[in-house]
Length: 138
Picture (cartoon, rainbow, N blue to C red):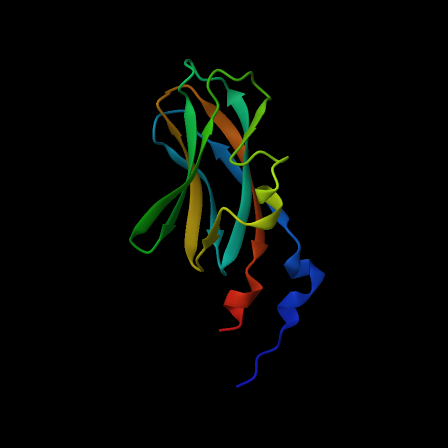
């Protein structure tokens, strides 16, 4: 059976920013999640600090759950960053940010951000994603 390649339209080929909501204060709190209804490429994650951490080791981790498999995709060091500052999973100026995704999120999986090693760190999360058109053609 032949499949349409309608997903090569720029609407689908371009990257989209998806608001993931707020990451709650507290160690290992699961929040700021997005559901991947189709296979997607995850290009970057931005974390805007809304409550500063109390130590330099304050981290925010990006985790993907697909079925029973849990994978850490990236770790962002927020430390004691000022409220309003943004930390990213990938530095925007690096060439790899524009050439390869962090990971391919499987259809029906979800990705979330959790705070690690600090009970006060909190933030807002945005995900940069694109539909993996090749995966839709199978």
